[in-house]
Length: 68
Image: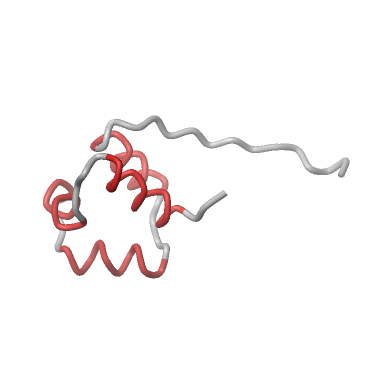
C-alpha cells in the first residue's frame, strides 16, 4: 500500500487537479499542502475531506495480524 501522500497525488492526477487547486479548496496555501505531502503529515479528517473533494471513497481497513 502506498503512503497517504502518494495516494493523494494519484487522486489529483486522476482528476487532472493541481496541488494549488487542492490548497484553494481547503483554504490553505499551496506551500502548506506541498509541505504536508512532502512529509506525509495528514490527519484522517483531512484525507477524508480531500477524498470527498476529488470524489473518491475513503476506506480504512484494519486486519487482525495477531495469529500471523
